[in-house]
Amino acid sequence: MILKKEFYFIRHGQTDHNISENKQKEDYPFDIPLNQTGTKQAQAAEPLIACLPIRTICYSPMRRAKETKEIVTHRLKADHHEILELKECTAKIWRDLSTLGQNSSIPVEGDSLAFINQVKKGLNKALALPGPLLIVAHGGVHWAISYLMNISNHEWAIENCKVIHFSIGLDEQWKAKKLN
Image (cartoon, rainbow, N blue to C red):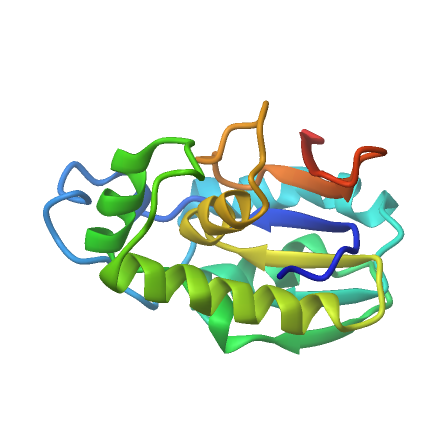
């Protein structure tokens, strides 16, 4: 079960690996920095983030997420919490998840299931903190969150530095809305 509490999510800015032609062939390099485009994407998202009522910022321990967090939250007065379980999956897991598309009724198994359970644990750690909160993480984490929440009418694979607002609808179902 996911704690029912609204939150905001931003995927890190672009890295050289994101635009590499070999990204599907090799395992994901885990601790890589933003590239120049990624830094500019984070700077462009910062004014939107600065206007949000954020009290707590939770982020992946991976360098690209930390760099994005530093840029997009520099004007916010909020508590910062690094959450290990918000780190990205491997390229193999991402390929497996991508083949499922946007269907939360398909069972996930093996390493992919372990990753989804890892994200669930990290998400609940974040949601237990004072809100509203911002999560700065990765595309695979966003996909796992969307899967866990059975999100419809929203792309599960998002672009770099897209800000998403997750909330509970009147029907008690999770909703996701892209803000930029």
